[in-house]
Image 1 (spheres, rainbow, N blue to C red):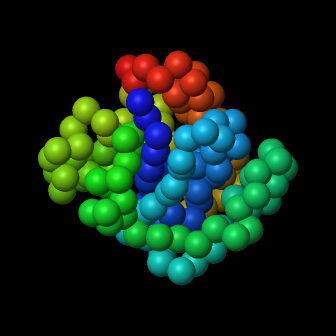
Image 2 (image 1 turned 120 degrees about the horizontal axis):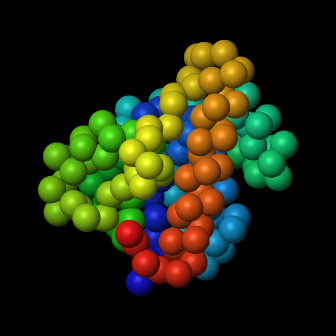
Image 3 (image 1 turned 90 degrees about the horizontal axis):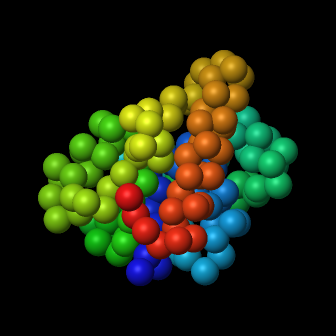
Length: 147
């Protein structure tokens, strides 16, 4: 049974906080957290992602970027990454997690684009991809069958 999910991106200020908050809102019985492989530790969520999240009824104003750590990896029943490179990096650093690390859009073999320091259109694309991945994982986690 999946009780804790860790959502990972690079800086932990755009993609993973949004995906984490969206999943947590729709699956309140599961514990969700987020982290970054190269977290901008202590930084808040990017102002544009905060705005886009708010437009979707999700609050990110209190988010603080945190790094990916051994303790967080070990404590997660499932780890969702934004890219294949992040998945590979985690599996290389913590080989025992193989089989419980997936991309947010794994079934389609798609990486979620990194919008950090890019144009609004890239943020919009990233949010659309995150919404798509969240919809998939919402169904998977509600049924508790991981792939």
